[in-house]
Length: 266
Image 1 (cartoon, one colour):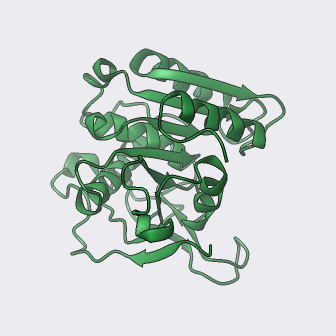
Image 2 (cartoon, helix red, strand yellow; image 1 turned 90 degrees about the vertical axis):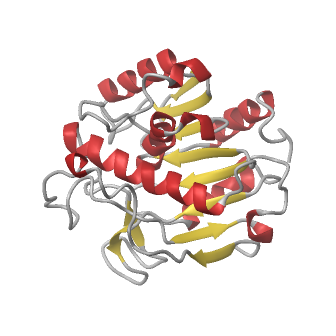
């Protein structure tokens, strides 16, 4: 963490689109609050130089998974794309503040969603609310002419995809590691679905063939949707559970180099 900068984002607390009442659902019995309630990103960890050391290169937008925090993917980026800037966002929903507890001692545990792996309408509503909060943060904190590439794991992997379903024009490419897909059954929860395919956005989707968290049908559905709507590179890794691997990182680095997003050498 020696070259990273931790920031707390000031805000008015209004969060994402507060007028989307039809996108706010039932109370969760896992994480306090309602599925789809407006969220706001308040904490971010930047790479060296406040995320502005290499302004001509794409900036990575790092999105962690359930029970993790903004430090998680920040460590990974030093291997995957060490010469690019990143902003690693902390999910707004608190599972455990920093200290000891169910998730161990550390920097805290957070979630983008009101459950570990929501489904159906609950997932649609939470995916929309979280993606809007992230997209709002980008609009407020990243210059409009700065290229942005979301990269996420698990919940964050879903959101790296869902950002293309709410504002595909803003994102140069997207990387989903062990991610999954919101079904899109709630009207308005994926408002850009009818235009994202026209943009042919490059997407890297990596997953473990032995994933015990995301069911195989969900992985197949995610792959099929991405294949139809994006310029997809999909990789499954034998023996890999709900995790990442060095083989996956090597494939990702090659993909980044091919798409002129990040240098392919350390």
